[in-house]
Length: 417
View 1 (cartoon, rainbow, N blue to C red):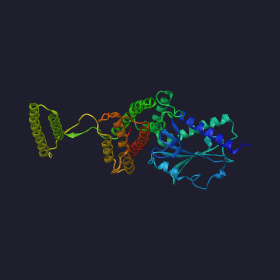
View 2: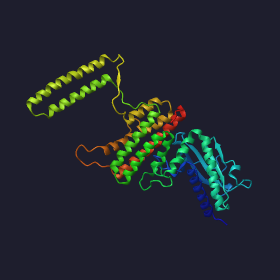
View 3: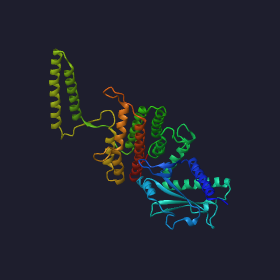
View 4: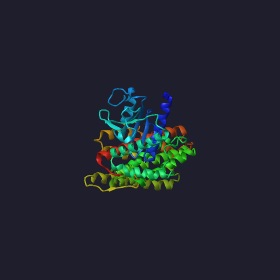
Protein backbone atom coordinates (compact mmCIF):
# COMPACT_ATOMS: atom_id res chain seq x y z
CA UNK A 1 0.00 0.00 0.00
CA UNK A 2 1.34 3.43 -0.96
CA UNK A 3 2.39 5.69 1.90
CA UNK A 4 1.71 9.43 2.04
CA UNK A 5 5.34 10.01 1.03
CA UNK A 6 4.88 7.73 -1.99
CA UNK A 7 1.77 9.64 -3.04
CA UNK A 8 3.52 12.98 -2.59
CA UNK A 9 6.49 11.83 -4.67
CA UNK A 10 4.33 10.54 -7.53
CA UNK A 11 2.30 13.74 -7.62
CA UNK A 12 5.43 15.93 -7.46
CA UNK A 13 6.87 14.10 -10.47
CA UNK A 14 3.58 14.48 -12.32
CA UNK A 15 3.42 18.22 -11.63
CA UNK A 16 7.03 18.68 -12.70
CA UNK A 17 6.32 16.80 -15.94
CA UNK A 18 3.17 18.85 -16.51
CA UNK A 19 5.07 22.15 -16.42
CA UNK A 20 7.95 20.70 -18.42
CA UNK A 21 5.44 19.85 -21.14
CA UNK A 22 3.87 23.27 -20.87
CA UNK A 23 7.30 24.76 -21.52
CA UNK A 24 7.75 22.54 -24.56
CA UNK A 25 4.46 23.95 -25.86
CA UNK A 26 5.88 27.49 -25.89
CA UNK A 27 5.31 28.81 -22.35
CA UNK A 28 8.26 30.04 -20.31
CA UNK A 29 7.77 28.57 -16.85
CA UNK A 30 9.58 29.42 -13.62
CA UNK A 31 9.31 27.47 -10.39
CA UNK A 32 9.25 29.22 -6.99
CA UNK A 33 8.83 32.73 -8.41
CA UNK A 34 9.83 35.38 -5.89
CA UNK A 35 7.73 38.51 -6.18
CA UNK A 36 10.01 41.49 -6.99
CA UNK A 37 10.57 43.75 -4.01
CA UNK A 38 8.96 41.18 -1.69
CA UNK A 39 9.92 37.97 0.11
CA UNK A 40 6.86 35.92 -0.89
CA UNK A 41 6.88 33.26 -3.62
CA UNK A 42 4.43 31.72 -6.03
CA UNK A 43 4.73 28.01 -6.81
CA UNK A 44 4.97 28.60 -10.56
CA UNK A 45 5.05 31.68 -12.77
CA UNK A 46 4.51 31.78 -16.53
CA UNK A 47 6.21 34.93 -17.84
CA UNK A 48 5.48 34.54 -21.57
CA UNK A 49 3.45 34.60 -23.82
CA UNK A 50 1.14 35.79 -21.01
CA UNK A 51 1.53 36.30 -17.29
CA UNK A 52 0.09 33.49 -15.17
CA UNK A 53 0.73 32.57 -11.54
CA UNK A 54 -0.02 29.02 -10.50
CA UNK A 55 -0.46 27.89 -6.91
CA UNK A 56 -0.43 24.10 -6.44
CA UNK A 57 -2.53 22.28 -3.85
CA UNK A 58 -2.30 18.51 -3.57
CA UNK A 59 -5.05 16.75 -1.63
CA UNK A 60 -4.75 13.23 -0.23
CA UNK A 61 -8.45 12.61 -0.73
CA UNK A 62 -11.58 14.56 -1.48
CA UNK A 63 -12.58 14.75 2.16
CA UNK A 64 -9.65 17.11 2.85
CA UNK A 65 -11.29 19.80 0.73
CA UNK A 66 -12.64 22.62 2.82
CA UNK A 67 -16.23 23.55 2.13
CA UNK A 68 -15.44 26.79 0.33
CA UNK A 69 -16.35 27.90 -3.15
CA UNK A 70 -12.68 27.83 -4.10
CA UNK A 71 -11.93 24.30 -2.96
CA UNK A 72 -9.53 25.54 -0.27
CA UNK A 73 -8.87 28.72 1.63
CA UNK A 74 -6.80 31.34 -0.20
CA UNK A 75 -4.09 32.69 2.08
CA UNK A 76 -3.28 36.35 2.62
CA UNK A 77 0.13 35.73 1.04
CA UNK A 78 -1.51 34.43 -2.13
CA UNK A 79 -3.82 37.44 -2.20
CA UNK A 80 -0.79 39.72 -1.87
CA UNK A 81 0.95 38.01 -4.79
CA UNK A 82 -2.11 38.45 -7.00
CA UNK A 83 -2.57 42.10 -6.01
CA UNK A 84 1.00 43.03 -6.94
CA UNK A 85 0.22 42.42 -10.62
CA UNK A 86 -2.44 45.17 -10.62
CA UNK A 87 -4.88 42.90 -12.43
CA UNK A 88 -2.37 42.02 -15.18
CA UNK A 89 -2.05 38.31 -14.41
CA UNK A 90 -4.20 35.19 -14.64
CA UNK A 91 -4.29 33.54 -11.17
CA UNK A 92 -4.73 29.77 -11.40
CA UNK A 93 -4.99 27.37 -8.48
CA UNK A 94 -3.97 23.85 -9.52
CA UNK A 95 -5.74 21.21 -7.42
CA UNK A 96 -4.40 17.63 -7.56
CA UNK A 97 -6.68 15.12 -5.86
CA UNK A 98 -7.79 11.52 -5.87
CA UNK A 99 -10.34 10.66 -8.55
CA UNK A 100 -14.02 10.59 -7.70
CA UNK A 101 -15.73 7.25 -8.26
CA UNK A 102 -17.52 8.67 -11.28
CA UNK A 103 -14.48 10.40 -12.72
CA UNK A 104 -13.26 9.46 -16.17
CA UNK A 105 -9.57 8.76 -16.75
CA UNK A 106 -9.73 10.88 -19.91
CA UNK A 107 -8.91 14.58 -19.23
CA UNK A 108 -11.13 15.61 -22.14
CA UNK A 109 -14.19 14.24 -20.28
CA UNK A 110 -13.67 16.24 -17.07
CA UNK A 111 -14.58 19.89 -16.39
CA UNK A 112 -11.01 20.96 -15.61
CA UNK A 113 -11.24 24.71 -15.06
CA UNK A 114 -13.83 26.87 -13.41
CA UNK A 115 -13.85 30.59 -12.68
CA UNK A 116 -14.40 31.56 -9.05
CA UNK A 117 -15.75 35.04 -9.68
CA UNK A 118 -15.94 36.13 -6.02
CA UNK A 119 -12.23 35.53 -5.61
CA UNK A 120 -11.19 36.48 -9.14
CA UNK A 121 -9.27 33.22 -9.58
CA UNK A 122 -9.45 30.06 -11.66
CA UNK A 123 -9.37 26.48 -10.39
CA UNK A 124 -7.69 23.86 -12.54
CA UNK A 125 -8.58 20.45 -11.07
CA UNK A 126 -6.75 17.25 -11.95
CA UNK A 127 -8.03 13.95 -10.60
CA UNK A 128 -5.00 11.70 -10.48
CA UNK A 129 -5.02 8.00 -9.64
CA UNK A 130 -1.58 7.13 -8.24
CA UNK A 131 -2.08 3.52 -9.33
CA UNK A 132 -1.85 4.68 -12.95
CA UNK A 133 1.24 3.15 -14.67
CA UNK A 134 4.21 5.50 -15.04
CA UNK A 135 4.01 5.63 -18.83
CA UNK A 136 0.32 6.61 -18.69
CA UNK A 137 1.10 9.27 -16.05
CA UNK A 138 3.59 10.85 -18.47
CA UNK A 139 0.98 10.78 -21.22
CA UNK A 140 -1.57 12.38 -18.89
CA UNK A 141 0.92 15.11 -17.99
CA UNK A 142 1.21 16.02 -21.67
CA UNK A 143 -2.57 15.82 -22.23
CA UNK A 144 -3.30 18.07 -19.27
CA UNK A 145 -0.56 20.50 -20.37
CA UNK A 146 -2.10 20.66 -23.85
CA UNK A 147 -5.55 21.35 -22.41
CA UNK A 148 -4.13 23.97 -20.09
CA UNK A 149 -2.40 25.62 -23.05
CA UNK A 150 -5.61 25.77 -25.07
CA UNK A 151 -7.44 27.26 -22.13
CA UNK A 152 -4.78 29.95 -21.64
CA UNK A 153 -4.78 30.83 -25.33
CA UNK A 154 -8.58 31.01 -25.43
CA UNK A 155 -8.62 33.14 -22.30
CA UNK A 156 -6.02 35.63 -23.57
CA UNK A 157 -7.18 35.74 -27.16
CA UNK A 158 -5.39 35.32 -30.46
CA UNK A 159 -2.93 38.15 -29.76
CA UNK A 160 -0.67 35.78 -27.80
CA UNK A 161 -0.46 33.18 -30.57
CA UNK A 162 2.33 35.00 -32.49
CA UNK A 163 4.32 35.35 -29.25
CA UNK A 164 3.73 31.67 -28.49
CA UNK A 165 5.01 30.68 -31.94
CA UNK A 166 7.99 33.00 -31.56
CA UNK A 167 8.78 31.45 -28.16
CA UNK A 168 8.85 27.99 -29.72
CA UNK A 169 11.25 29.23 -32.39
CA UNK A 170 13.49 30.86 -29.80
CA UNK A 171 13.51 27.72 -27.66
CA UNK A 172 14.94 25.80 -30.60
CA UNK A 173 17.95 28.14 -30.46
CA UNK A 174 19.34 27.87 -26.93
CA UNK A 175 21.87 30.60 -27.73
CA UNK A 176 19.01 33.07 -27.98
CA UNK A 177 16.82 32.21 -25.00
CA UNK A 178 18.06 30.10 -22.07
CA UNK A 179 15.84 27.24 -20.98
CA UNK A 180 14.06 28.19 -17.74
CA UNK A 181 15.15 24.91 -16.16
CA UNK A 182 18.70 26.26 -16.40
CA UNK A 183 18.44 29.70 -14.75
CA UNK A 184 21.59 31.72 -14.26
CA UNK A 185 21.61 30.92 -10.58
CA UNK A 186 25.42 30.90 -10.55
CA UNK A 187 25.47 34.46 -11.81
CA UNK A 188 22.90 35.92 -9.46
CA UNK A 189 20.91 37.08 -12.46
CA UNK A 190 18.48 34.18 -12.66
CA UNK A 191 15.67 36.12 -10.96
CA UNK A 192 15.91 38.92 -13.54
CA UNK A 193 15.32 36.50 -16.39
CA UNK A 194 11.81 35.59 -15.21
CA UNK A 195 10.60 39.19 -15.38
CA UNK A 196 12.73 40.10 -18.39
CA UNK A 197 11.03 37.54 -20.63
CA UNK A 198 7.66 39.25 -20.19
CA UNK A 199 8.93 42.09 -22.38
CA UNK A 200 8.07 39.80 -25.29
CA UNK A 201 4.45 40.76 -24.56
CA UNK A 202 5.20 44.44 -25.21
CA UNK A 203 8.01 44.68 -27.78
CA UNK A 204 8.49 43.77 -31.41
CA UNK A 205 10.83 40.87 -32.12
CA UNK A 206 13.57 43.29 -33.21
CA UNK A 207 13.26 45.39 -30.06
CA UNK A 208 13.23 42.31 -27.87
CA UNK A 209 16.36 40.90 -29.52
CA UNK A 210 18.19 44.20 -29.00
CA UNK A 211 17.19 44.30 -25.35
CA UNK A 212 18.20 40.67 -24.97
CA UNK A 213 21.70 41.49 -26.24
CA UNK A 214 21.95 44.14 -23.53
CA UNK A 215 20.86 41.50 -21.02
CA UNK A 216 23.44 39.04 -22.38
CA UNK A 217 26.21 41.63 -22.01
CA UNK A 218 25.04 42.23 -18.45
CA UNK A 219 25.43 38.52 -17.66
CA UNK A 220 28.86 38.39 -19.28
CA UNK A 221 30.17 41.28 -17.18
CA UNK A 222 28.79 39.70 -14.01
CA UNK A 223 30.28 36.29 -14.81
CA UNK A 224 33.65 37.94 -15.33
CA UNK A 225 33.49 39.69 -11.98
CA UNK A 226 33.37 43.10 -13.65
CA UNK A 227 30.82 44.53 -11.23
CA UNK A 228 31.48 48.17 -12.12
CA UNK A 229 30.96 47.46 -15.84
CA UNK A 230 27.91 45.39 -14.96
CA UNK A 231 26.48 48.39 -13.10
CA UNK A 232 26.90 50.55 -16.20
CA UNK A 233 25.29 47.84 -18.34
CA UNK A 234 22.33 47.58 -15.98
CA UNK A 235 21.67 51.28 -16.48
CA UNK A 236 21.89 50.88 -20.26
CA UNK A 237 19.44 47.99 -20.15
CA UNK A 238 16.94 50.09 -18.22
CA UNK A 239 17.42 53.08 -20.56
CA UNK A 240 16.71 51.02 -23.66
CA UNK A 241 13.67 49.36 -22.07
CA UNK A 242 12.12 52.70 -21.13
CA UNK A 243 12.97 54.33 -24.48
CA UNK A 244 11.26 51.68 -26.60
CA UNK A 245 8.30 51.29 -24.26
CA UNK A 246 7.70 55.05 -24.04
CA UNK A 247 7.66 55.40 -27.82
CA UNK A 248 5.18 52.54 -28.14
CA UNK A 249 2.96 54.29 -25.56
CA UNK A 250 2.93 57.53 -27.54
CA UNK A 251 5.42 59.40 -25.34
CA UNK A 252 7.84 61.77 -27.11
CA UNK A 253 11.23 61.13 -25.48
CA UNK A 254 13.12 63.89 -27.32
CA UNK A 255 14.36 66.88 -25.38
CA UNK A 256 12.43 69.94 -26.52
CA UNK A 257 13.52 73.50 -25.74
CA UNK A 258 12.13 76.85 -26.96
CA UNK A 259 14.67 78.40 -29.33
CA UNK A 260 14.66 81.59 -27.26
CA UNK A 261 15.61 79.70 -24.10
CA UNK A 262 18.24 77.69 -25.96
CA UNK A 263 19.82 80.92 -27.22
CA UNK A 264 19.93 82.36 -23.69
CA UNK A 265 21.38 79.09 -22.39
CA UNK A 266 24.11 79.11 -25.05
CA UNK A 267 25.07 82.69 -24.14
CA UNK A 268 25.25 81.82 -20.43
CA UNK A 269 27.54 78.88 -21.26
CA UNK A 270 29.83 81.18 -23.26
CA UNK A 271 29.93 83.67 -20.38
CA UNK A 272 30.79 80.85 -17.98
CA UNK A 273 33.72 79.75 -20.17
CA UNK A 274 35.04 83.31 -20.46
CA UNK A 275 34.84 83.79 -16.69
CA UNK A 276 36.70 80.54 -16.00
CA UNK A 277 39.39 81.49 -18.50
CA UNK A 278 39.77 84.91 -16.85
CA UNK A 279 40.17 83.39 -13.39
CA UNK A 280 42.75 80.87 -14.59
CA UNK A 281 44.85 83.41 -16.53
CA UNK A 282 47.87 84.94 -14.79
CA UNK A 283 49.18 87.20 -17.58
CA UNK A 284 47.88 90.76 -17.09
CA UNK A 285 47.41 91.53 -20.79
CA UNK A 286 45.54 88.29 -21.35
CA UNK A 287 43.31 88.89 -18.33
CA UNK A 288 42.34 92.26 -19.80
CA UNK A 289 41.34 90.56 -23.05
CA UNK A 290 39.14 88.09 -21.17
CA UNK A 291 37.64 90.97 -19.16
CA UNK A 292 36.43 92.55 -22.44
CA UNK A 293 35.05 89.20 -23.58
CA UNK A 294 33.15 88.84 -20.30
CA UNK A 295 31.61 92.29 -20.77
CA UNK A 296 30.49 91.41 -24.32
CA UNK A 297 29.12 88.03 -23.25
CA UNK A 298 27.22 89.64 -20.37
CA UNK A 299 25.54 92.01 -22.82
CA UNK A 300 24.57 89.06 -25.06
CA UNK A 301 23.03 87.24 -22.06
CA UNK A 302 21.02 90.34 -21.09
CA UNK A 303 19.83 90.84 -24.66
CA UNK A 304 18.81 87.19 -25.10
CA UNK A 305 16.82 87.22 -21.85
CA UNK A 306 15.15 90.52 -22.80
CA UNK A 307 14.27 89.01 -26.20
CA UNK A 308 12.81 85.96 -24.47
CA UNK A 309 10.52 88.11 -22.30
CA UNK A 310 9.27 90.26 -25.17
CA UNK A 311 8.48 87.30 -27.44
CA UNK A 312 6.77 84.98 -24.95
CA UNK A 313 3.34 85.44 -26.55
CA UNK A 314 4.52 85.14 -30.14
CA UNK A 315 4.43 81.33 -30.23
CA UNK A 316 8.22 80.86 -30.19
CA UNK A 317 9.60 77.97 -32.22
CA UNK A 318 10.99 74.85 -30.56
CA UNK A 319 14.28 73.09 -31.02
CA UNK A 320 15.21 69.50 -30.21
CA UNK A 321 18.79 69.09 -29.03
CA UNK A 322 20.31 65.69 -29.75
CA UNK A 323 19.50 62.95 -27.27
CA UNK A 324 16.49 61.83 -25.25
CA UNK A 325 15.19 63.21 -21.97
CA UNK A 326 16.20 61.68 -18.67
CA UNK A 327 14.36 58.53 -17.61
CA UNK A 328 12.44 60.23 -14.81
CA UNK A 329 11.38 63.03 -17.17
CA UNK A 330 10.05 60.39 -19.57
CA UNK A 331 8.11 58.56 -16.86
CA UNK A 332 6.78 61.92 -15.61
CA UNK A 333 5.35 62.51 -19.09
CA UNK A 334 3.88 59.03 -18.94
CA UNK A 335 2.33 59.88 -15.57
CA UNK A 336 0.70 63.03 -16.97
CA UNK A 337 -0.68 61.21 -20.01
CA UNK A 338 -2.22 58.33 -18.07
CA UNK A 339 -2.83 60.07 -14.73
CA UNK A 340 -6.51 59.11 -14.73
CA UNK A 341 -5.61 55.42 -14.41
CA UNK A 342 -5.16 54.63 -10.72
CA UNK A 343 -3.12 51.44 -11.26
CA UNK A 344 -0.64 53.22 -13.55
CA UNK A 345 -0.29 56.08 -11.07
CA UNK A 346 0.52 53.66 -8.25
CA UNK A 347 3.14 51.83 -10.32
CA UNK A 348 4.80 55.10 -11.37
CA UNK A 349 4.87 56.33 -7.77
CA UNK A 350 7.12 53.37 -6.98
CA UNK A 351 9.28 53.90 -10.08
CA UNK A 352 9.69 57.68 -9.68
CA UNK A 353 9.23 57.98 -5.95
CA UNK A 354 6.72 60.18 -4.16
CA UNK A 355 7.61 63.53 -2.59
CA UNK A 356 10.88 63.37 -0.62
CA UNK A 357 11.39 59.75 -1.69
CA UNK A 358 13.91 58.24 -4.09
CA UNK A 359 12.23 55.99 -6.66
CA UNK A 360 13.60 52.78 -8.13
CA UNK A 361 14.77 54.49 -11.33
CA UNK A 362 16.84 57.11 -9.48
CA UNK A 363 18.40 54.46 -7.21
CA UNK A 364 19.49 52.43 -10.24
CA UNK A 365 20.76 55.40 -12.23
CA UNK A 366 22.75 56.76 -9.26
CA UNK A 367 24.74 53.54 -9.16
CA UNK A 368 24.95 53.49 -12.94
CA UNK A 369 26.44 57.00 -12.88
CA UNK A 370 28.96 55.97 -10.24
CA UNK A 371 29.94 53.02 -12.44
CA UNK A 372 30.24 55.11 -15.60
CA UNK A 373 32.28 58.07 -14.28
CA UNK A 374 35.61 58.46 -12.55
CA UNK A 375 35.79 60.02 -9.11
CA UNK A 376 36.57 63.73 -9.57
CA UNK A 377 38.90 63.74 -6.56
CA UNK A 378 41.11 61.03 -8.04
CA UNK A 379 40.02 58.35 -5.59
CA UNK A 380 39.26 54.86 -6.96
CA UNK A 381 35.57 54.29 -7.67
CA UNK A 382 34.34 50.72 -8.02
CA UNK A 383 30.93 49.13 -7.61
CA UNK A 384 31.03 46.32 -5.06
CA UNK A 385 29.27 43.00 -5.51
CA UNK A 386 26.98 43.86 -2.58
CA UNK A 387 25.99 47.19 -4.13
CA UNK A 388 25.44 45.55 -7.50
CA UNK A 389 23.24 42.82 -6.01
CA UNK A 390 20.99 45.48 -4.48
CA UNK A 391 20.94 47.32 -7.81
CA UNK A 392 19.92 44.17 -9.67
CA UNK A 393 17.10 43.58 -7.19
CA UNK A 394 15.87 47.10 -7.92
CA UNK A 395 16.28 46.52 -11.67
CA UNK A 396 14.23 43.33 -11.45
CA UNK A 397 11.40 45.12 -9.65
CA UNK A 398 11.56 48.03 -12.12
CA UNK A 399 11.32 45.73 -15.14
CA UNK A 400 8.44 43.87 -13.49
CA UNK A 401 6.53 47.12 -12.89
CA UNK A 402 7.23 48.42 -16.41
CA UNK A 403 5.68 45.24 -17.83
CA UNK A 404 2.64 45.79 -15.58
CA UNK A 405 2.29 49.39 -16.79
CA UNK A 406 2.65 48.27 -20.41
CA UNK A 407 0.05 45.55 -19.98
CA UNK A 408 -2.43 47.99 -18.41
CA UNK A 409 -1.92 50.46 -21.27
CA UNK A 410 -2.36 47.76 -23.91
CA UNK A 411 -5.56 46.50 -22.29
CA UNK A 412 -7.10 49.86 -21.41
CA UNK A 413 -6.10 51.86 -24.48
CA UNK A 414 -5.98 49.12 -27.16
CA UNK A 415 -2.39 49.85 -28.14
CA UNK A 416 -0.62 47.30 -30.33
CA UNK A 417 2.98 46.14 -30.07
